[in-house]
Image (cartoon, rainbow, N blue to C red):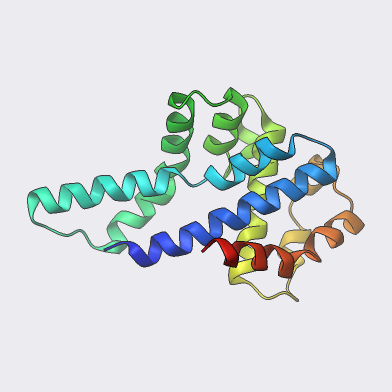
Amino acid sequence: RFEEHMERLWQHSAAAGVWAREIARLRRRNVEGAFVAGLLHDIGEPVLLQAVAQFEWREKMEFADHDIFPLIKELHPLVGGVLVNRWGLADWMADAIEWHHMPDAAPRHEEEAMTTCLADELAHWAIEGSADETSGLRALPLLEELNIYPEELDQLLAARECVLAITEDWA
């Protein structure tokens, strides 16, 4: 019953992966690792949705979406971080995924969490927002913390159509 959500999530995750790659390229960081962290940043969501679906099937009941989605939004970073850690991926990647909604609270690997957070924000903007409305992105404090200057952000934002074209090919 979560197929539509999963399709949107896949497009968003693919876009976040591409954005993370571009942010890392701009900052001369690990491009491939940033891509994987961006791609997997919401991996906790399908894991939790699968658990809900199995529970509903087993108990022959259905939860209301307004009951489960806030909980999934809250828990998915932690679940994703644990999962990536159990897969044996790098600690920094697990931390980036676990803390992508609160990178300034990350106990370690804050820079990677900020990159993943910015990639997440750019993916939401590119897919759901207006290309002309960038004030929310420009006001993000993590831009300064990542040393991304306004002209560099402009360079990233200019890649919107390219990122969307790439992710449409994957869908």
